[in-house]
Length: 277
Image (cartoon, rainbow, N blue to C red; front, side):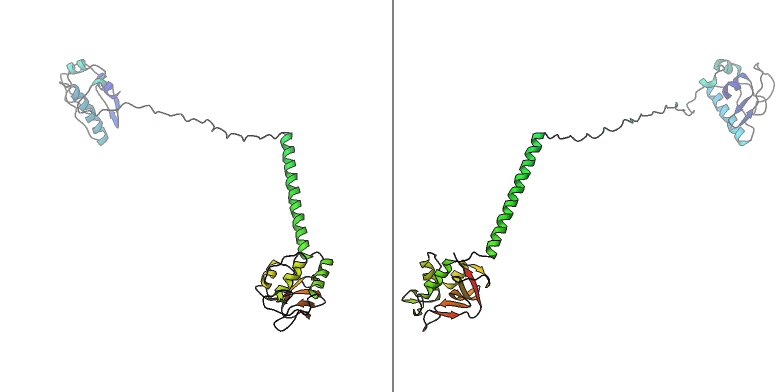
């Protein structure tokens, strides 16, 4: 608008102050050059000159001083017209056109909900089958438990020898006086394990050959459980050196050693009991 006012001859407001111009558009033959506070000198001025004059006037108003404009000619004003916005100069700074702000819409759509877990349905037939399988498993576990308890009870309290035990003792007593013989397994001569093997063989029970082997094959029992007809061992578990037939009451039938015969003797040393059926 300041440029339009300069051409029309009306006062206008500069960017930083007011500049008064003579309103008369006719040619002036007298007077001096126009200033920011006085008449504007007429003369010839190009379009570039008009632009430079406006810039000079604005700068003078800012600095607080009086600026002198170049001479303006009527022909320049007439040819230029009232719209000095069309004035251009190669020295003028290009003002970029305003740019429209671009707003990118944000999607506020809710995230897809997690899929609900599938509901597994069980038919009545399936429930009945599962209950039956569970019942069978419980019954099998109870049967195993009862079998283990029975086995443990049998080991803790071995069955009585009864008449078998008495027959074993009687058979051993029948060989009283048979001399001891190292490695002997017949009535002509016995060592300790030879005697027990022969007597049990008469009862239809096969025993291993040596005392240690017979100890390893026996069911080990306590002294309170021992009955006539059981075996009695002397020595430690890994070093059994003698075996005999228990007769009860702290006595045993034994083939003791070289120079002696089969006899009823007393328990001695470190002994333990075993049963073979």
